[in-house]
Image (cartoon, rainbow, N blue to C red; front, side, top):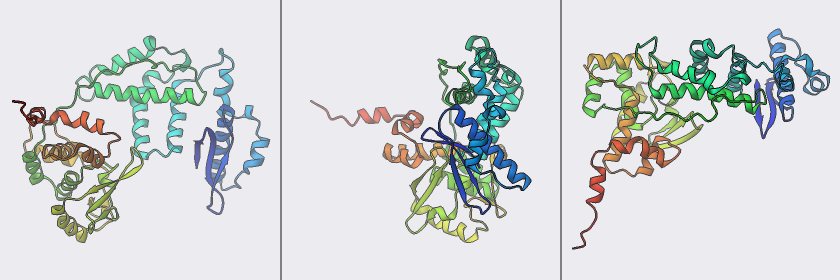
Length: 371
């Protein structure tokens, strides 16, 4: 159950006593949002207590909006002196919105942890409509550019930008819902991020695989051959049902754009897949003792240490290696972009092409002579 928007209308979906899904519309605007939130809470309460579910029609006609705390935000907007939506309250509503919008539990958990450990201690009690960029957000940003208490090193610009993106999303949510009037981060220009220097080579991949545990070694094979994102969003969610070993294709679901993409499987890799499928004890391509994995970061880091890899390497670098290897062998940029699941070819070119040493020189060498 949850609150969501469809064509600007606030909706609540829930399941009735027979298990059938119901979708109730409450209209548009802040008042409709408040009604939807109130009804959603009433349904949750009824399910928890085991009492009869409220009737959507009678609930709407009988509910006195001023009696429901969900409309406190809207009421205070009409009186500047009472407008006191604090960042912590707005952040909580945003988390509920993410859940109702179908975002993964992992994403919601990650945002929750950032809020608890990083954002709320600094911004939690601040009234959003009284916040300014120079007075509140600039000191916040500078604080995160300082040394991390965990690593003892300054945070990368990439990390600082991601932190600001999360906070910006919360502010924009407040504006869109009519809960607040300002976005204190509006107009901020993202600082340019220094591209991460990926040093992993095929030779080092083989060294790491020799030191890897069997399930990690197999995961590295799959990641390199299919170019999947190595975490739970793609690689660790891949099921045998997603592979057609007769046609030689893999259907990979990307949680980023909620779409499947088709990746051709290297014919040389198909016998290995068939072998592993016969030995599989679960529906997942990558498993550990019959169970689905959620992370392999520690296992990968340990294997790198045993292989005496002296630079920083990540599982994600295998996906990078998949792309650069194909491009260096002359693969079509658009085809590689499709297999990577990028939204545009430009994204692929901007991300990977600068790693291909000598490609510009090779390109101009193809020009014929006029003499």
